[in-house]
Length: 295
Image 1 (cartoon, helix red, strand yellow):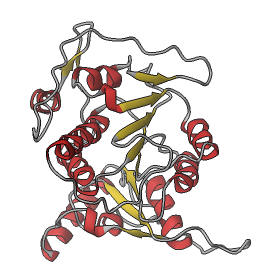
Image 2: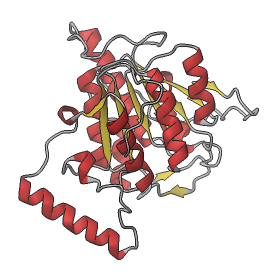
Image 3: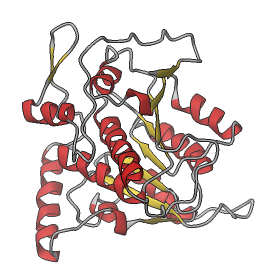
């Protein structure tokens, strides 16, 4: 496992000696992922039962992420926020299956431009709080047989992302699911935008949070990005999705979590049963020095 713990002298996470059979070639999904969702829990190395839900990504969303990576065949992916490692496992399993396909068949050309300065088929994850999660995200990735596809940084995202910009790294897909404070999300976007080529994809998780939707409103009003509906999967029929959204917004109001003027989730996922928005970069930043569009 390649681990980078460069800032603030964080200790390197331990190596866990557990059985980690690699999934068979062309397997649809990893057995460890299947077990976690089937049991709704997993055992830590200490024997403690860990229940990662409802905080962790839903299986339907994880599989959507897996199929997205399978479809676009990115050269390199980046994730902000690791926690118990489930989203990282979906991404890494897709990268593994992409590599298996390339070994057995002539790969189809990727719709993404090649990534500069990154290993093909490799995932990078950033999480300053992995130690607080008792390194269980890294533990799950290792026992799933996927740690060879991962470079991990236990540092604040703004520190790592700024360094990546200096190093002129590039990623074809970036999944942002770190701190959900508005300024943190905005800073993650500010640096991620400099790391992603035209045509690359940015995914913002947790649309139910106003800070995420506010950041998306800024991006769509002020930058060259569009909602990438072609990568967001099917959506229900018109009436079904609006009834679904009405029920969801009613439950939010009853829980005291109104939208606060930031637009509803449906604005960004267009009625799909997912909690994220996928943006595609359509052009480089060419704003005038005094540009500002209200959002």
